Image (cartoon, rainbow, N blue to C red; front, top):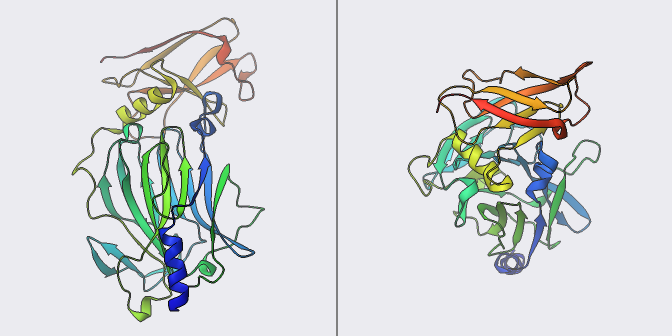
Length: 328
Protein backbone atom coordinates (compact mmCIF):
# COMPACT_ATOMS: atom_id res chain seq x y z
CA UNK A 1 0.00 0.00 0.00
CA UNK A 2 2.81 2.42 0.82
CA UNK A 3 4.29 2.04 -2.63
CA UNK A 4 0.95 2.59 -4.32
CA UNK A 5 0.24 5.63 -2.20
CA UNK A 6 3.68 7.08 -2.89
CA UNK A 7 3.07 6.84 -6.61
CA UNK A 8 -0.40 8.27 -6.19
CA UNK A 9 1.02 11.25 -4.30
CA UNK A 10 3.10 12.02 -7.38
CA UNK A 11 -0.10 12.04 -9.40
CA UNK A 12 -1.80 14.31 -6.86
CA UNK A 13 1.04 16.80 -6.90
CA UNK A 14 1.54 16.78 -10.65
CA UNK A 15 0.42 19.92 -12.46
CA UNK A 16 -0.15 18.06 -15.71
CA UNK A 17 -3.76 18.46 -16.67
CA UNK A 18 -6.27 18.10 -19.43
CA UNK A 19 -8.55 20.86 -20.65
CA UNK A 20 -11.88 20.64 -22.42
CA UNK A 21 -12.71 23.98 -23.99
CA UNK A 22 -16.46 24.55 -24.14
CA UNK A 23 -17.35 27.85 -25.71
CA UNK A 24 -20.50 29.39 -24.32
CA UNK A 25 -21.62 29.12 -27.94
CA UNK A 26 -22.18 25.44 -27.19
CA UNK A 27 -24.90 26.63 -24.86
CA UNK A 28 -26.03 29.67 -26.83
CA UNK A 29 -25.25 28.56 -30.36
CA UNK A 30 -26.64 31.18 -32.76
CA UNK A 31 -28.77 32.53 -29.95
CA UNK A 32 -30.43 29.21 -29.24
CA UNK A 33 -31.48 28.77 -25.60
CA UNK A 34 -30.47 25.21 -24.86
CA UNK A 35 -28.67 23.22 -22.20
CA UNK A 36 -25.31 21.62 -22.85
CA UNK A 37 -23.89 18.56 -21.12
CA UNK A 38 -20.24 17.89 -20.38
CA UNK A 39 -18.87 14.76 -18.78
CA UNK A 40 -15.67 14.13 -16.87
CA UNK A 41 -14.57 10.53 -17.29
CA UNK A 42 -11.95 8.57 -15.36
CA UNK A 43 -9.81 6.11 -17.31
CA UNK A 44 -7.70 3.44 -15.65
CA UNK A 45 -5.93 1.02 -17.94
CA UNK A 46 -8.49 -0.19 -20.49
CA UNK A 47 -11.49 0.71 -18.32
CA UNK A 48 -13.36 4.01 -18.51
CA UNK A 49 -15.81 5.26 -15.86
CA UNK A 50 -18.27 8.13 -15.54
CA UNK A 51 -17.37 10.53 -12.74
CA UNK A 52 -19.00 13.94 -13.10
CA UNK A 53 -21.79 15.31 -15.30
CA UNK A 54 -21.99 19.08 -15.78
CA UNK A 55 -25.15 20.63 -17.22
CA UNK A 56 -25.53 24.29 -18.12
CA UNK A 57 -28.83 26.14 -17.91
CA UNK A 58 -30.02 28.78 -20.33
CA UNK A 59 -29.29 31.54 -17.80
CA UNK A 60 -25.66 30.50 -17.32
CA UNK A 61 -26.25 28.44 -14.19
CA UNK A 62 -24.61 25.04 -13.72
CA UNK A 63 -25.55 21.73 -12.12
CA UNK A 64 -22.82 19.19 -11.27
CA UNK A 65 -23.78 15.57 -10.59
CA UNK A 66 -21.79 12.62 -9.32
CA UNK A 67 -22.46 10.55 -12.43
CA UNK A 68 -23.80 7.35 -10.86
CA UNK A 69 -27.16 5.65 -11.21
CA UNK A 70 -29.43 6.30 -8.17
CA UNK A 71 -29.20 3.76 -5.36
CA UNK A 72 -30.59 3.41 -1.82
CA UNK A 73 -28.84 5.79 0.56
CA UNK A 74 -27.48 3.93 3.58
CA UNK A 75 -24.80 4.63 6.20
CA UNK A 76 -23.49 7.67 4.35
CA UNK A 77 -21.38 10.47 5.82
CA UNK A 78 -21.04 14.10 4.80
CA UNK A 79 -18.67 16.85 5.89
CA UNK A 80 -20.56 19.86 7.25
CA UNK A 81 -18.74 22.78 8.87
CA UNK A 82 -15.55 20.76 9.17
CA UNK A 83 -17.16 17.82 11.00
CA UNK A 84 -18.02 14.37 9.68
CA UNK A 85 -21.67 13.57 10.31
CA UNK A 86 -23.83 10.57 9.66
CA UNK A 87 -25.68 11.08 6.41
CA UNK A 88 -29.29 10.37 5.53
CA UNK A 89 -30.69 6.85 5.44
CA UNK A 90 -33.35 6.74 2.74
CA UNK A 91 -35.03 3.73 1.17
CA UNK A 92 -35.47 3.41 -2.56
CA UNK A 93 -33.23 4.66 -5.34
CA UNK A 94 -31.84 8.09 -4.46
CA UNK A 95 -29.60 10.39 -6.52
CA UNK A 96 -26.04 10.92 -5.43
CA UNK A 97 -24.57 14.31 -4.55
CA UNK A 98 -25.14 17.27 -6.83
CA UNK A 99 -24.05 20.89 -6.64
CA UNK A 100 -26.15 23.68 -8.16
CA UNK A 101 -24.38 26.91 -9.10
CA UNK A 102 -26.77 29.73 -9.93
CA UNK A 103 -25.57 32.65 -12.03
CA UNK A 104 -26.15 34.87 -8.99
CA UNK A 105 -23.37 33.04 -7.09
CA UNK A 106 -25.66 30.98 -4.85
CA UNK A 107 -24.34 27.41 -4.51
CA UNK A 108 -26.31 24.52 -3.00
CA UNK A 109 -25.29 20.98 -2.21
CA UNK A 110 -27.90 18.21 -2.41
CA UNK A 111 -27.58 14.69 -1.06
CA UNK A 112 -30.20 11.99 -1.57
CA UNK A 113 -32.36 14.55 -3.36
CA UNK A 114 -32.45 16.87 -0.32
CA UNK A 115 -30.80 20.28 0.02
CA UNK A 116 -28.07 20.13 2.64
CA UNK A 117 -26.09 23.37 2.51
CA UNK A 118 -25.70 26.75 0.78
CA UNK A 119 -22.77 29.14 0.29
CA UNK A 120 -22.42 32.42 -1.64
CA UNK A 121 -19.66 33.47 -4.02
CA UNK A 122 -19.25 36.10 -6.74
CA UNK A 123 -21.87 36.05 -9.53
CA UNK A 124 -20.74 33.64 -12.24
CA UNK A 125 -20.64 36.34 -14.91
CA UNK A 126 -18.27 38.45 -12.78
CA UNK A 127 -15.82 36.00 -11.24
CA UNK A 128 -12.41 37.44 -10.34
CA UNK A 129 -10.79 34.41 -8.65
CA UNK A 130 -11.14 30.71 -7.98
CA UNK A 131 -13.83 29.62 -5.51
CA UNK A 132 -14.08 26.16 -4.01
CA UNK A 133 -17.47 24.56 -4.55
CA UNK A 134 -16.99 21.31 -2.68
CA UNK A 135 -15.44 17.87 -2.91
CA UNK A 136 -16.40 14.32 -3.83
CA UNK A 137 -14.43 11.37 -2.50
CA UNK A 138 -14.69 7.95 -4.14
CA UNK A 139 -13.46 4.70 -2.54
CA UNK A 140 -11.73 3.61 -5.78
CA UNK A 141 -12.27 4.14 -9.51
CA UNK A 142 -13.87 0.72 -10.09
CA UNK A 143 -16.83 1.75 -7.89
CA UNK A 144 -17.88 4.27 -10.53
CA UNK A 145 -20.38 3.38 -13.26
CA UNK A 146 -19.18 2.72 -16.78
CA UNK A 147 -20.55 4.70 -19.75
CA UNK A 148 -23.48 3.42 -21.77
CA UNK A 149 -23.12 4.68 -25.33
CA UNK A 150 -26.85 4.28 -25.99
CA UNK A 151 -27.99 6.65 -23.23
CA UNK A 152 -25.02 8.63 -21.87
CA UNK A 153 -24.91 11.40 -24.44
CA UNK A 154 -22.96 14.65 -24.02
CA UNK A 155 -21.72 17.60 -26.01
CA UNK A 156 -18.12 17.31 -24.84
CA UNK A 157 -16.12 15.09 -22.49
CA UNK A 158 -12.77 15.29 -20.74
CA UNK A 159 -10.86 12.28 -19.42
CA UNK A 160 -8.62 11.93 -16.38
CA UNK A 161 -6.18 9.04 -16.88
CA UNK A 162 -5.07 7.40 -13.62
CA UNK A 163 -2.24 4.91 -13.08
CA UNK A 164 -3.40 1.30 -13.26
CA UNK A 165 -2.02 0.44 -9.80
CA UNK A 166 -4.11 3.05 -7.95
CA UNK A 167 -6.81 1.22 -6.00
CA UNK A 168 -7.09 3.51 -3.00
CA UNK A 169 -9.54 6.31 -2.15
CA UNK A 170 -9.42 9.37 -4.43
CA UNK A 171 -10.77 12.78 -3.47
CA UNK A 172 -11.62 15.44 -6.05
CA UNK A 173 -12.09 19.11 -5.21
CA UNK A 174 -14.34 21.16 -7.50
CA UNK A 175 -13.61 24.85 -8.14
CA UNK A 176 -14.97 27.62 -10.36
CA UNK A 177 -13.19 30.74 -11.58
CA UNK A 178 -12.86 33.11 -14.53
CA UNK A 179 -11.97 31.48 -17.84
CA UNK A 180 -9.40 30.10 -18.45
CA UNK A 181 -8.07 28.09 -15.52
CA UNK A 182 -5.31 25.51 -15.10
CA UNK A 183 -5.63 23.01 -12.22
CA UNK A 184 -3.03 23.47 -9.49
CA UNK A 185 -2.76 19.69 -9.02
CA UNK A 186 -3.53 16.78 -11.33
CA UNK A 187 -6.95 17.42 -12.78
CA UNK A 188 -9.05 18.80 -15.60
CA UNK A 189 -10.55 22.16 -16.53
CA UNK A 190 -13.84 22.68 -18.38
CA UNK A 191 -13.30 26.09 -19.95
CA UNK A 192 -16.56 27.80 -20.86
CA UNK A 193 -16.65 31.28 -22.35
CA UNK A 194 -17.12 33.18 -19.08
CA UNK A 195 -15.99 30.72 -16.43
CA UNK A 196 -14.06 27.50 -15.88
CA UNK A 197 -14.89 24.47 -13.78
CA UNK A 198 -11.79 22.84 -12.30
CA UNK A 199 -11.81 19.26 -11.00
CA UNK A 200 -8.53 18.14 -9.42
CA UNK A 201 -7.22 15.52 -7.02
CA UNK A 202 -6.37 16.43 -3.44
CA UNK A 203 -5.46 14.34 -0.37
CA UNK A 204 -8.56 13.13 1.47
CA UNK A 205 -9.17 15.89 4.05
CA UNK A 206 -9.72 13.64 7.08
CA UNK A 207 -9.05 10.08 8.23
CA UNK A 208 -12.06 7.80 7.89
CA UNK A 209 -13.21 5.00 10.19
CA UNK A 210 -12.92 1.49 8.70
CA UNK A 211 -16.69 1.17 8.27
CA UNK A 212 -16.64 4.11 5.85
CA UNK A 213 -13.81 2.81 3.70
CA UNK A 214 -16.11 1.71 0.87
CA UNK A 215 -18.44 4.71 0.85
CA UNK A 216 -18.77 7.76 -1.36
CA UNK A 217 -18.35 11.04 0.52
CA UNK A 218 -19.12 14.66 -0.27
CA UNK A 219 -18.82 18.04 1.37
CA UNK A 220 -18.51 21.76 0.77
CA UNK A 221 -16.91 24.72 2.55
CA UNK A 222 -18.57 25.86 5.75
CA UNK A 223 -18.92 29.33 4.20
CA UNK A 224 -18.30 31.08 0.91
CA UNK A 225 -16.86 34.46 0.02
CA UNK A 226 -19.99 36.26 1.27
CA UNK A 227 -22.71 35.77 3.87
CA UNK A 228 -25.54 36.55 1.42
CA UNK A 229 -26.17 36.68 -2.36
CA UNK A 230 -24.59 39.64 -4.13
CA UNK A 231 -27.38 40.02 -6.71
CA UNK A 232 -30.83 38.61 -7.46
CA UNK A 233 -31.69 36.02 -10.10
CA UNK A 234 -33.17 38.41 -12.66
CA UNK A 235 -30.22 40.80 -12.62
CA UNK A 236 -27.78 37.90 -12.71
CA UNK A 237 -29.48 36.40 -15.76
CA UNK A 238 -29.47 39.72 -17.64
CA UNK A 239 -25.86 40.43 -16.70
CA UNK A 240 -24.85 36.98 -17.93
CA UNK A 241 -26.47 37.53 -21.33
CA UNK A 242 -25.01 41.02 -21.61
CA UNK A 243 -21.55 39.63 -20.87
CA UNK A 244 -21.99 37.05 -23.66
CA UNK A 245 -23.94 39.05 -26.25
CA UNK A 246 -23.20 42.70 -25.44
CA UNK A 247 -25.72 45.30 -24.30
CA UNK A 248 -28.27 44.64 -27.06
CA UNK A 249 -31.17 42.69 -25.49
CA UNK A 250 -31.11 39.32 -27.28
CA UNK A 251 -33.96 37.19 -28.54
CA UNK A 252 -33.20 33.55 -27.89
CA UNK A 253 -34.73 30.53 -29.59
CA UNK A 254 -35.47 27.43 -27.52
CA UNK A 255 -35.24 23.82 -28.67
CA UNK A 256 -39.05 23.72 -28.78
CA UNK A 257 -39.13 26.53 -31.36
CA UNK A 258 -40.40 29.14 -28.89
CA UNK A 259 -38.53 32.41 -28.27
CA UNK A 260 -37.46 34.44 -25.25
CA UNK A 261 -36.95 38.21 -25.38
CA UNK A 262 -34.86 39.78 -22.62
CA UNK A 263 -35.22 43.32 -21.33
CA UNK A 264 -32.22 45.55 -20.66
CA UNK A 265 -33.13 45.81 -16.94
CA UNK A 266 -35.76 44.22 -14.67
CA UNK A 267 -39.11 46.03 -14.67
CA UNK A 268 -41.56 46.64 -11.83
CA UNK A 269 -44.06 44.25 -13.43
CA UNK A 270 -44.09 41.65 -16.20
CA UNK A 271 -43.43 43.48 -19.48
CA UNK A 272 -45.84 43.58 -22.42
CA UNK A 273 -44.27 42.51 -25.67
CA UNK A 274 -44.67 44.22 -29.06
CA UNK A 275 -42.80 42.89 -32.10
CA UNK A 276 -42.80 44.22 -35.66
CA UNK A 277 -42.16 42.00 -38.70
CA UNK A 278 -41.32 42.54 -42.36
CA UNK A 279 -43.95 39.94 -43.28
CA UNK A 280 -47.67 40.62 -42.91
CA UNK A 281 -48.47 36.98 -42.12
CA UNK A 282 -46.34 36.89 -38.95
CA UNK A 283 -47.60 37.65 -35.45
CA UNK A 284 -46.73 36.90 -31.82
CA UNK A 285 -48.44 34.65 -29.27
CA UNK A 286 -47.11 35.18 -25.75
CA UNK A 287 -46.49 32.14 -23.51
CA UNK A 288 -46.82 32.37 -19.71
CA UNK A 289 -43.79 31.17 -17.77
CA UNK A 290 -44.23 28.20 -15.47
CA UNK A 291 -43.58 30.34 -12.40
CA UNK A 292 -45.96 31.38 -9.63
CA UNK A 293 -44.83 34.97 -10.22
CA UNK A 294 -44.19 36.01 -13.80
CA UNK A 295 -40.64 37.37 -14.35
CA UNK A 296 -40.23 41.09 -14.92
CA UNK A 297 -37.16 40.93 -17.16
CA UNK A 298 -38.20 38.66 -20.04
CA UNK A 299 -41.08 37.44 -22.22
CA UNK A 300 -41.60 34.08 -23.87
CA UNK A 301 -43.53 33.74 -27.12
CA UNK A 302 -44.29 31.88 -30.32
CA UNK A 303 -43.99 33.38 -33.78
CA UNK A 304 -47.05 32.38 -35.76
CA UNK A 305 -47.63 32.38 -39.53
CA UNK A 306 -50.65 31.36 -41.61
CA UNK A 307 -50.31 27.79 -40.34
CA UNK A 308 -50.23 28.83 -36.67
CA UNK A 309 -47.23 28.35 -34.40
CA UNK A 310 -44.15 27.87 -36.53
CA UNK A 311 -41.94 25.53 -34.49
CA UNK A 312 -39.59 24.52 -37.34
CA UNK A 313 -38.21 27.74 -38.83
CA UNK A 314 -36.06 30.37 -37.16
CA UNK A 315 -37.98 33.55 -38.02
CA UNK A 316 -35.87 36.08 -36.13
CA UNK A 317 -34.46 37.53 -39.35
CA UNK A 318 -37.97 38.85 -40.08
CA UNK A 319 -38.17 40.88 -36.85
CA UNK A 320 -37.91 44.63 -37.47
CA UNK A 321 -38.64 46.01 -33.98
CA UNK A 322 -38.99 44.83 -30.39
CA UNK A 323 -40.66 46.68 -27.50
CA UNK A 324 -40.86 45.44 -23.92
CA UNK A 325 -43.29 47.87 -22.31
CA UNK A 326 -43.53 48.03 -18.50
CA UNK A 327 -42.84 50.37 -15.61
CA UNK A 328 -39.33 50.63 -14.23
